[in-house]
Amino acid sequence: MALVLSSGGARGLAHIGAIEELLAHGYRITSIAGCSMGALIGGVYAAGKLEAFRDWMKTIDRKKMLELIDFSFSINHLVKGDRIIEAIMEFVPDVAIEDLPIPYSAVATDLKAGREMVFTKGSLFEAIRASISLPSFYKPVQRDGMILIDGGVLNPIPLNRVKRQKGDLLVGIDVSGHDYKSQWEEAHQHALQQKKDKSLKAQILDKLIPDNIEFNYYTVLSRTSSLMIRQNSILMAKLMKPDMLVDIQMSRYGTFDFDKSEKLIAIGQQKTAQAISKLESGNQNV
Image (cartoon, rainbow, N blue to C red; front, side, top):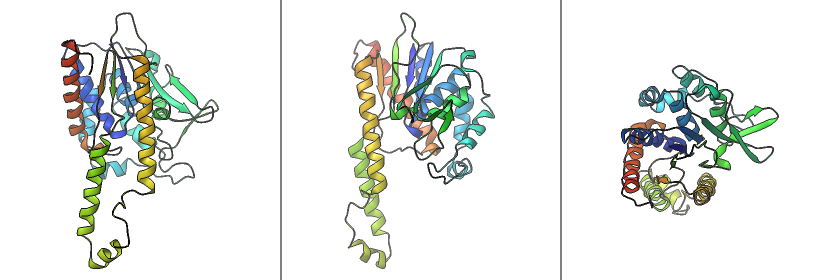
């Protein structure tokens, strides 16, 4: 099968569970493409180091996450992004993409030209680093006159960028979506609980603040970006019509919940198992 993994930040850890479930059911991955976190997981799998990566993710807690963040506070980014790549390279050596055992593609966005940059050769980790460059958070990658940022900006699930052989199933794992209603309700309940726990002074101030205070500058930008990415992924699926699309929408987990890897991996396994069952029973609406 030709496997395509979407963007989605920490939610992309569900890709690990999806891959494990596909392999457990006897499917053979003949090529792989990914964007952002999907490019990272796909690259690690293509290099034969998925199990080692999963074991490493188990060690990640909030403290270790902070240790891996090399703050920059530049005018165009908060984090350099080198430290995380260096940590992964300790157990996943960099290789040339063309030397991987299966064809691999990673998608980034050229900010200057406003178009996709598809990596199919050269340094695996340069490709991954470019593809995961979340705008305004990670430092963009400059290469051959391009300024490269997260591929999810233009193509969050690059079903059109994976190499396919005759007879290959086209399979996409999409973690770019959210259960928006549930997520919003949970955030609102959390905000209400915070108000109850505050001091008398804070409670008085709360009377001057609208109940929907969680609807702020950051949440508006984040939600707007998520909605645009989601629509792009839906349009790509309609265009390419994959044989199986595992649509994993989450309400509880966000972009930076890397310390919850085992729960996210389990979600990927569960949703993929359900999709495989539907595919093999002849129901294509997965």
